[in-house]
Length: 157
Image 1 (cartoon, rainbow, N blue to C red):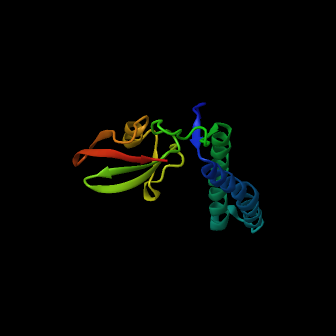
Image 2 (cartoon, one colour):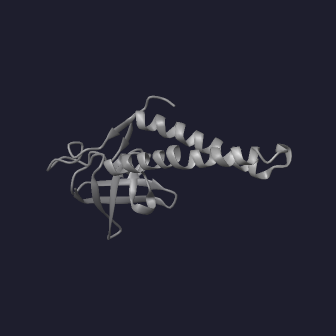
Image 3 (tube, rainbow, N blue to C red):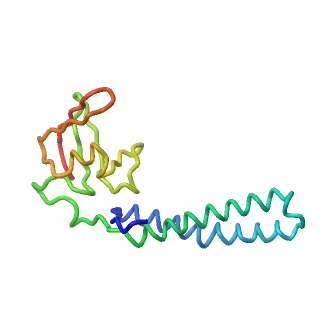
């Protein structure tokens, strides 16, 4: 992994730490025990439990390594990183925009925390990039498969 900064909110960091702890201290030891038990059953060439436990352990170890790298590169999106009155949209901002007469609320977050179903958009997504630095009343247009979509910034928190 490169040394690119990974931006997370405090909540996002806690979620990653929780996942890391669950994997490293919970699932990994259980899976190692499953692997040991399966190995003790004898012939490994026909032992489906051994193969499954070995594959699960490889997956867990890969994810643990990935999380360790991510956690080394985290930059917290703090309240000081967020908006000061009159400043434009920044990482961590909650933004209300108007699209075709309808209001939508988005939160601009780092790419690891982005989740469109929760209206969390990455600062590196087309909409996220377009919104950064914008102020209330400003408009942005995004090219979408269905054509250009215009967003007007209504409020920033």
